[in-house]
Image (cartoon, rainbow, N blue to C red; front, side, top):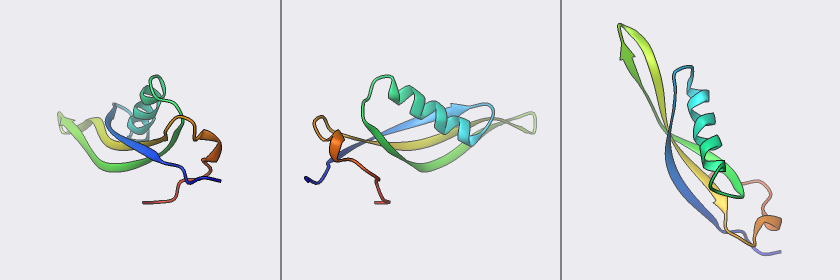
Length: 80
């Protein structure tokens, strides 16, 4: 069995509802153009305040995926 190689991209997910929603939006959008998504890592969390209330959330997310031809070798990615 070979050792898998991963590529990591950074995205900024947004949501008006929650931090989790911002992460979900980033992953869902990445899955439309990237294959073999394997893991995500939250790098930063921030938000926008309007009228004294939270208006929206922004989450910087690193998303890892295996390169072509290795998908059979991928199991669980541990923390880097």
